[in-house]
Amino acid sequence: MTTEPLEQAEDIAWAERFRDVNSMLNLCRGSEDAALLLSTCRNEYLTINALFVELQTLLGDARQHFGLRSGAELLIQGGQSSLAAERLERAWQTVRHYEHKLDVWARRHEIWGDVEQAMAQLREQDHLSFSRVRRVLTTTRVLADGDGWSQDLLRIELQDRPHLQLQWEALASAFQKLRAATALGHAASGFLPSGEPTLQRSLELDDSALDVATNSKRVAELLALVAAVADMCAWQREDANGQRIVTFSSHYDRPRNAIRPKTAEVPLECGSYQPQAWVAQIGMLIRETMFVVHEELCRAFRPNTAKPDLPPPFRISLPQPVPSLRGSICDDLRIERIKCTTTAVATDDFMMVIAHLAVPVANLNGRTYRYKESSVIEQVKTDVRLAIREAKRAGSRTVIFPEYSVPLAMKNELLQLANDNDMVIVAGLEGDWRDSQLVDGVAVAIAGESRLHIQNKQTPSLEEEARASFYRDGSIKLFTNTAIGDFAVVVCSDFLERSVQQVWTPQGPSPEIVFVVARNKYYELYQSFATADAVRLYAAVAVANVRDGEPGEADSAGSCFALPMREAQPAKGTLHECSGTFLKTIATVNVPLHAIRARSRGKPSQGFLGVPQSAQRA
Image (cartoon, rainbow, N blue to C red; front, side, top):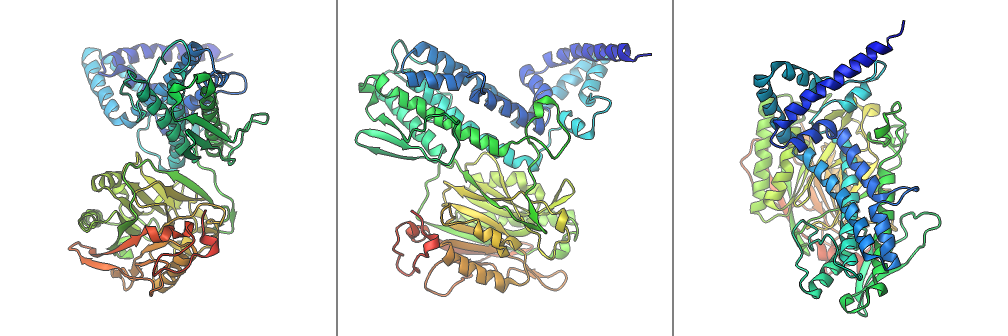
């Protein structure tokens, strides 16, 4: 006897319930957004997958050219304006689909509230339909032999999943480049014969209409987009001999038979030239941008081998890859560059603050590194906000908090505090547990950024008993294009590891500032390392440390600043009294970035040591 007819009947009955779901959606104020939330953006896994698919559509594949690639090829050919505009219009619709899904996920709690109101209204109108809809929304229907992983992927879950942070950052970086490249294609297609582009974009790449009444404005828009795309891809650009010249780097792969142009050159007065003479350069710029994005996505999303095979839409690696280990030490650290989008003007000098937030380790659970008492959490929250206010009052652009100090409950608040105070906040968080592994993370909140960044510790200390159960992601982040220069964050025992020091090779990028977030009773060692690294890296080093003493006692011994100066280092900075529970003082120091940047000029500033060869940068 077969059960197939019964299974088919169950499928039919399940499908019929979606008529009731449609009735509920019609009661929502934003029915389209609610439908997208329940179908495509049910949880963070599905949302990332949906966004990845939109980027795949923009990039195309080996069998078919989608809108952006084919539009770029038509621009390279220098003709068929209407066809190029049509292809680029299709690409822009894909951009819109991406933005719509991203917006729905960002507003998921608001939209879910709309769904709940519609459910309440449906309950009053038709209780049977309400019961059917509730069953659909609360039941994840998977195959009988499906595993818990499938269940987790398909259920409605509106909470953040912090371990997907790298995937979000990769998507954001790729989309920013492709969005700008699409806007650039539209601007260029408008100069070809037979018409204006079907879509005009403003200099800020937003939705406001561009006034194209004058040719000069159209030229200015195009040149601004060229500059924006070049900067996003980290290409060198300069204006020389009447040209805006973009020099392509060779740090990304191209298809085997692809042409390898060295530069793209667009006349600064391109409006007075025949477009066929320069539009092809724009097409090449877009195509090279797509190659850059393709490599970024290939690095961030790989075939999933850590779990059983996933359903077809999930053929990308959403869980983070686990780095190879030598014993308990992370052996293959890599630099992850994060180019920030701040609009703040960087200065040659700025003030930084170390918050002497000395919360005794006795207040933490010895296994989870979480605060034991809710009353302590509230006291620490108050101290954190106080430190930020005092740092702002002192004129600081950044504030650093020690390891295992800031409550996880403040994660969402930190970015808002950074934006409200126009500063960078580096905060050692309470311990977190992810997939049965201890996470020692530092939140990096940068004013102007759309999301919080996390730098994880890679090597547990001897005090942390997690050892093999310690979470690592193999990444040391380098934050560039910020109002305080290029900086990195090192977490406690990572400061002792040779692998972390060796990640800054003479051939690669290097930080101008290193923030060390620590909790170490042997603080003299960290002070010595800070002094040495300030010279070796030719950077400013700030250590925010907590020294635990007798049970229930702690202080900020070891917190210091170090600069590559001739005078004695390190320095404690200028102390400012505070009236917090655990926060008694903050320390301030002025950082002369202009002197640190002498490493690219060769000659040190007055009062500073010479630049070691390993720290010199072109």
